Structures are given as structure tokens and as C-alpha cells.
Length: 228
Image (tube, rainbow, N blue to C red):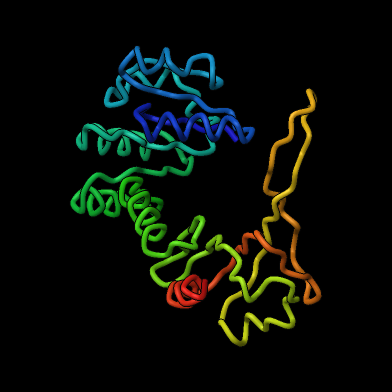
């Protein structure tokens, strides 16, 4: 996909690099030339311009864009103006970073349905990791449900998924399993990678050090994490 990211701070820059690595054509925009220079050789295009100036958009491939991300983090006014201009100029999906509850309200009034709060989301992930010591990572689906990577409880090791009856006993679905595998690179060095084993069947045996990717209510995920 062709994606334009406005704002190359920590969040915008990380997003630009990650999306590029996963095969997308990314155009990074910032009014600070130093930030533009940092990513110029790492993403498809980087342009220095003021995104609050509507005339400047003539230099952008705005009509061919699939997604526009407003990642501006230092200036709430600039973020809102940029979002407003994008809503006017393009039919592409607009994803906006929000900096405050009032910012949320303004974005919602503008018809933006994809609103992100990177600091809050990062804080929530860290909170989960601290409170649930056996959780590896987690993605919130909504206020109640998550998809989480959890370390395998000791009593699960050596048993099949049907033996464990995870859905009926623990009210969780195992989406997949991440299994550590030793890999030898081109120069002979050994590294350990996580390999996705696909959709597990009823006869799949859980191994020690497996990471279970589960879907369910946060409360039920919390209970299984405390079984360790």
C-alpha cells in the first residue's frame, strides 16, 4: 500500500520504518529537515513541508494514497488542521493520533473513526506485562477482549489441546502457538527464532517453552497467567 505519514517524531518514524519493512511504500512528512534526513534512505520518500499549509499538498501523491496517518505529537493544533485538510483533499483512510480527550472529541466530530493513542496503548501494554508476569505481549480488541501471547503453564506441557479442554475449562481459544526453533545462518552462527506452527489441532501437543497465542476475555487471560 501507499501510505503517507505526517510527523516523524518517535511514533511516526517508528511506524514509517515498520511499515516499510513489511512491504509498504511510505512517504514521510515533517517540517523539521533534520527528521526528514534521518529517514530519507530508509523509506520510499521523505519530504520537508508544513502540513498545515494546504497549498503544500500539491507536492504530494495525495490522490494515489491508500492511508494517511497523522502522527504529529508536539502540536495539537497542527495535528487537527492536518487532519482537516486531509479530509478535504482525499478519500483515503485517515488515521489520526490523539493527544487529549478534547482532541478525541474534535476528531470524532470530523468523522475520524481510526484514532490512536500510542502513549496510552504503550502504557497499557507495560501495565499488563508488569501485572501479569507470564504475559509476553497483548493486543486489545476492545474494552473486554484481547489477543495475548502467554508463556505455557507448567501443567499444560506434554498434553494435547483436547486433553486440556482450554475452551470449556478456561473459556479461551488458542489461535496459534509460537515455538522456539534453533536456526543456523549463512555463516554458521546459531540463533533462536520463534516459529508459528499454524492453526493447532485437537491433537497438537503443548511443549515446554511454547508461547500460546490466545483470544478471550481479559479476566480469563489473567486467570491463566496466574496459573504459573
